[in-house]
Amino acid sequence: MKTPKFSKPIRAVIKNYITGENYTLNSVDGSFRLTDRDYSQITKICNEPDIYNLLFRERFKGRKYVKQDARIWMSMAKQGWEESSNFIFLVRDNNGSIVGAIDIKSPDLSGAEIGYWASAYARGFMTNTLKKLCKIAEEAGYSSLFALILSRNLKSIGVIKRSGFKNLGLVNERGKDFCKYQILLGHGG
Image (tube, rainbow, N blue to C red):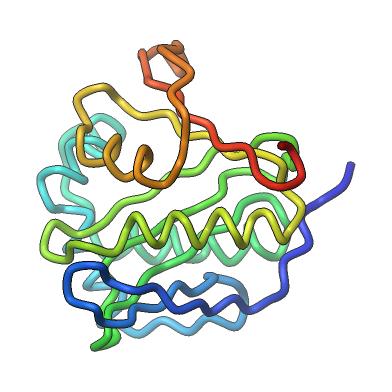
C-alpha cells in the first residue's frame, strides 16, 4: 500500500482573515517540542463547552479533560507521524499560543477522514488552515479527503463549505448520524 509522502517537519503560514495576522500550522512529528504552557493551552481549549461537548463529554463520561490527556494525545500524535498512520497538526497564533488542531486520520490516499477544532477565543483562521491542509495532503499524494460532522455543528459546517468540500448527505458511522463532506484533490479529480 502506498503511503503519504510528507516532508517533515511541516511548518506553514496561515493568514487570519479577520486580523490579517500570520498563524502557523505545525506537524506534531518527532521534531515538534511542546512546553508545559502548550499542554495547559490544549487542556483549556478542550474544556471549552463547544469542543468538550462535541468531542469529550461522552468519551470521558463527563470528567474534565486534564493535562495528562493532552500529554497522551501529543504522544499519540508523534507516534502517528512516526508510523505514518495519522497526521496531527497544531495551529499557533502570532503570539505562539496554541489555538487549534487539525488532522488527517489515516494514510488512505484514496480518501482519508479529517477533523479539526479551534478555540472559541481565536476566530478567523480555520478555513484557511483547512485549505492549507488540503494543499499539503494533495502534495503528499492524497486524492480526496472527507469530514463527518454532526448536523448541529454549524460552525464546522461553515468551515468545511468555505473550504470547497461538497455535501454527500447523511451517513451513519460509529452509531451516529453525520453529514459527510468530501473534497477531491488533484490526484482524484
